[in-house]
Length: 586
Image (cartoon, rainbow, N blue to C red; front, side):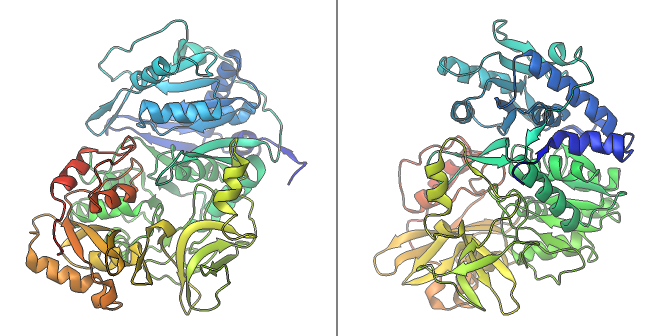
């Protein structure tokens, strides 16, 4: 749509208020970390707050094309900030609230941001994260940073500590925003002007600034939200992700608002202050469409169905999963226990780079297979290639690529065209390379088998971590599993399995023998028998819930230097795994 003019903020707010008469409709039910903290925000109120924030940013010197770093928890000001940037043509770069000062610094420096929006702190469960202090640590180390007006800080009144303050660069949010005008004309932008930069971390190396532009991203997030979640105007939709990740950008902010949806905006975690928190919120707001991660599902599975039975979940109509392939056992529990056997499960495959769903079922229209992302979304053309770049027909397994672009595809890596081309297009010229392995079955359904760098080459046979992990989690004692490779003098690589057991299950030799049989000997053949099985009370995960397989590979190989662990949600997990590392074959 090059040559067209638009403004995404106008489309998701002004259009709903002025043209569709949705001003009094609830845009967000905000639910805080503590259940007694809540706020209802209508579309009219949201528009006014966004305009105030936009005017405050302009007063601080932010102009069209400037990059604005946002380091905020899941509070309404996060939505206000990103939409305010979009309204005035600034490019937002949101950093997950919880990343270390170095991770924050890396992203701010790479995007050359002119201002940082943050909060004094946030509670996640019982854990206090002092965001302003983390930002100050970054400023102390990086005095050469590009920030112009410095740090605008939201003060959360329930926090019980004093925030350090530098009057030369720090500005209180309420002082900047509350007295600003509620009217701000949108900046009309070219369709291909940048909307945001969002950094995605690889298993190693420098994070890449994925760049998305305005019109195509708006169209694609709006369309996928409407059809994948079968959106109706009386729905209450809840995506449990954090806006610091692409899921929150596409399916908490832009996609739902473009459709005039009512959403739940949740600041907390699944098990605080009790393990039924998700189910309590679904009952409270009569949630009809629920979108969460397999990691959260497996976590809540450990507590059984008793917490579910305390709440009325009859409002649910569609369930969704996002972030990683879901193993069939977790899919069935989600479908049967949470959805009570009557809600379709949309297992969505997509990436930061794709902007929105590319492989996904459509509720009630696509016959479902537990663990399969099923079929491509409209206009998406998936292809499976072998190692030599040859297209595979029919039933096949290999590299998942896409043959032609779609409106929401990334437009580049910020400031690094060479990285963009090398990462996504060089391996198989003429295709977008996802980096994921994939299997297509006889019905044409697609099954994501894991990252290509998570593929295992055992005696010349390519095995996927996702398949092995799914087999292990079929055992009634296993809550979660992660599989990596370890060098083997005969096989080249062998399987090293980390298993987290359900409560009250004992890790012993009898269980290991059962898992060896379950872990593929029964499924594929003896080549896939695990060589090592280690008890893992917890797995190293990022704050978004993704398993850091790089760390597991290093533990399996007995490497001493594990590199940067700053993005781990709980670094202590690594210490436990190192102390329990297998010294002999299971």
